[in-house]
Length: 159
Image (cartoon, rainbow, N blue to C red):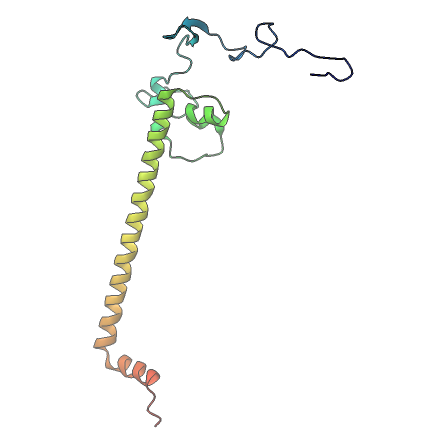
């Protein structure tokens, strides 16, 4: 590779210490040997797991974020009021497997509730339409002056 007027430039590698570390520098991690012998980050203090407030098991007074089970799926105007998992998504941070599962389950619950509302609305509209149709039919049949007026409009007698 050629540098900008400086001659050949060696690519930086992790062995030389110039490469990017795959862990962010502000993140406190200790290293642990995995099953295959590689180094893996070990969580300290449970920074990535959900606490009982986030799960909705015990609501803590004074916390701005709402528990995930109470979230209705909307924004509401204040990012601090969103559940912690949704805040992490907005900041494009990684979610743990537990957080992903809880968030997917909550989205599934919200979609099921929306589908039930749609079905209930359709059923109510269908009942209203049938009731209005039955009322209109009854009025049409029971009142001869309405029937005669409509028939005169449809089939004019010319007289």
